[in-house]
Length: 472
Image (cartoon, rainbow, N blue to C red; front, side, top):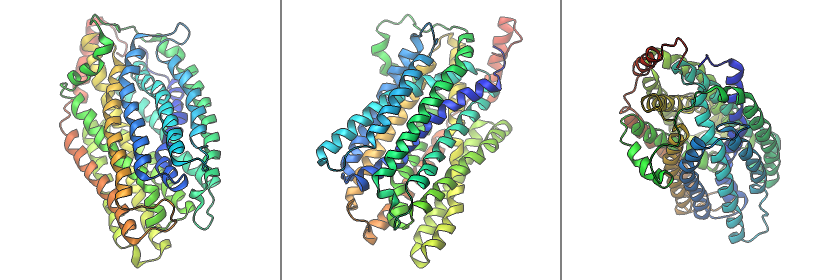
């Protein structure tokens, strides 16, 4: 295949903007919205979010299987599923933030659960083919890193956007702008419109390239393959590179679950920051992730992807440690002083986190490309589904535990001011949860052995076999 053009990379990357904005809005606000705005208990919100996250993981390999085997005449492989999913995500994104506060708790819980399950279903029909699309159109080692850089930048912009919208639609009203439902509804209108625009742009912008991708065998000869998807998942874990990658990535993102799910509680009730101050902190986090992208791409080319990822995780661990130190001494200085002290620490956290949105996916693409060349079989989306399945199972368990912990520490959604015991417990949950997850992820990632040399050697052999000068 010819080298990937910049305009195609741009079109692919922009697809992550709409999807990423909705995804990040959910991650940032849903736990806080469910407990502190709707007044549902932490356990019930945790159960709803955990069930939807588990379903998201369960559906990923199934959607991956379908995406690998069926394509439309008009849109080819992957793109038809993405286009349909875009519109349904946009609709239910509005519905979930519009839950009437006047409803009884059981009805609020059911509405929340149904919307979460629906959003996760169509999110899967977009994200799993989307990840596979990126691997299909950029099989070259360096092209893949570049493509992931485009994708990551747009995703991080999508992560920053909810914070900007929070600043616009949740102005500080005695420090409680984040407790008003109207702001969440207004944000959902913007993010849903953006999801549709970016989804359509991605589909149209990559349509020509996906039709140029060589066809690999996709259906296979195995009988009852659909029903053996999860059996094959455990067989896949025997791959010495896939296994540490999938588990390391899952564990690393658990840290993000603690930070995003309880972070709003921590900043609101423990640090006593206003909605405006929280916006600036979240912006610092995402700016750190955005500005880090060229650095992590450069470092991965110099020392390879796994060592660069380990460096990033250490940076993130240092940032969390600084936040923990400031948290311990927050009562000795004013809120404004604490805010300015914690700002650079959050930026450091964002700088380290930036690599998690790029390098593990690029490493995963290398593993899949290796398997595709060896077997001459395209199971890209199926493998993508396996990776998301493992992460979602781990994430659902983490969210379920977080919901229980909020009730265990006696967090009271109806009270604008929490006791000092609850405030301290929120800090312990966030800081220890992040630190343990990151340290464990470093240990697991170190078992990954695939290097740039391994990929380039195999691609060179493939070129020589095909007698071609084109990039594989």
